[in-house]
Length: 163
Image (cartoon, rainbow, N blue to C red; front, side):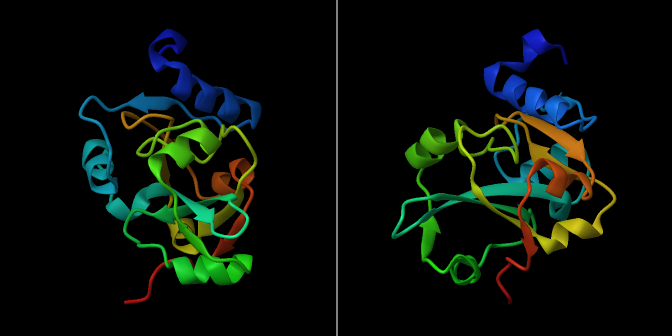
């Protein structure tokens, strides 16, 4: 995919990856990948290998919080609240776009408009390769779990809801 085909949002992600020294190429998925299941099906990997980028909003201080979690997991908001020492709730679409510069369904781990409090799901570290959104619901990029903390420095922890 050439720079001209990427579009502004995905180009911002590619530029961030290049600046961080992560050798990754953005892939365009014609059928889209608005959900982890759709992305996994298009890519040919398991849902668990998809990095879901979820934005939460702190209740008291109105800060954005990024949680990178396995596509197979649901995030336990109470765990995140406990780790932050402040309650969180899922952010709405307007807040996500305003604070990250990306729309829900395409939020990547890098290239945001401002620094974000960040948590990485420890379950992502078990795979040889993982796939993350690249700025739009139609673009993704491959990386290794070792790359994830390099490009998105955050706390690796258990974030999933226990069943």
